[in-house]
Image 1 (cartoon, rainbow, N blue to C red):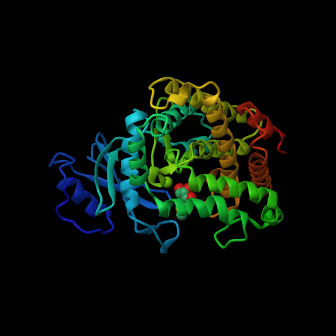
Image 2 (tube, helix red, strand yellow):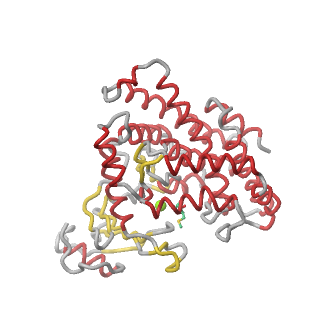
Image 3 (tube, protein in one colour):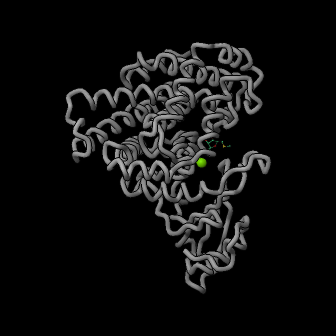
Length: 395
Ligand code: SR1
Ligand code: MG
């Protein structure tokens, strides 16, 4: 994609976004273009341009040279825009229809121009309102199996896989995850952010050496196991959905890591949502948790049976070993996500929007307890139904 007017990076504004859309002939020349900034994430600007009639729209997403949530004091690589666009394209090859179409990218402006999904809703927002999105877990289970299996050594020639590991090297964004998910919440670190009423629970976490040992092992997996091209930040705010459709967005944290990480992050966010609901309202979320894992396994097994890239795939017991390892990793990563979303830097609206103080603190104590138990007993938890049972035991 050629960009004539702006060759060097500059922050886009609504006006320059419209000029860019005209310059790139993305709309007919007479269309009265309208632009709005719709980004509510932690890192980027997201602009939506429509043709005035509202019939045609595009999204122009621009990475800022710093983390928007913190400001210019936290510089951040612009390369993440390229990683995000390439990951959308690579994942889209396998999980057809489950990611937005990328129309164009420009590395110097750090922008990605893609399909407008504003007819859909961010899943976190919908779940908070009590929606349940019937297709969500089947679509995400399939997305996880198709993207993770097909970018792994189980599917790719070793040369191709290793060249993708290099292409998706993403050290700065990985460092955010290493700090914010695996390290800071487990130590008395300045990035942590928690309510005073949780002080005793938080100190108990900081002083729990057994827990910290298990988190150290999970962090080590994240640092060293280049199994598949991960989304890298698959929380419910990274998914758009309706009753009929699901689209996974925002893979700027993509890199080669352990397969269980994406699964664990998604499950962890569903678990947080489950604790915010009362009684029977939790069932829909528990069904999604079970169905995500069961769909992932079924699709992963289907992929496993196809192709002959690895002769060991036909060895009795190997597939079961791989799935068991992925399951235990996923449970542990889910536990880390629960803890960091409760006391770390990046909170979630599911918890913070609970208006009643007592109820909010009780729910946060539950997510902390569940997180600890999932991390500590992940090797003894042998089925997704046992995860649901464990959640029922947390008071
Ligand atoms: C400074 S970035 C904070 C969080 O937002 C992203 O979505 C990731 O989850 C990251 O940990
Ligand atoms: Mg994001």
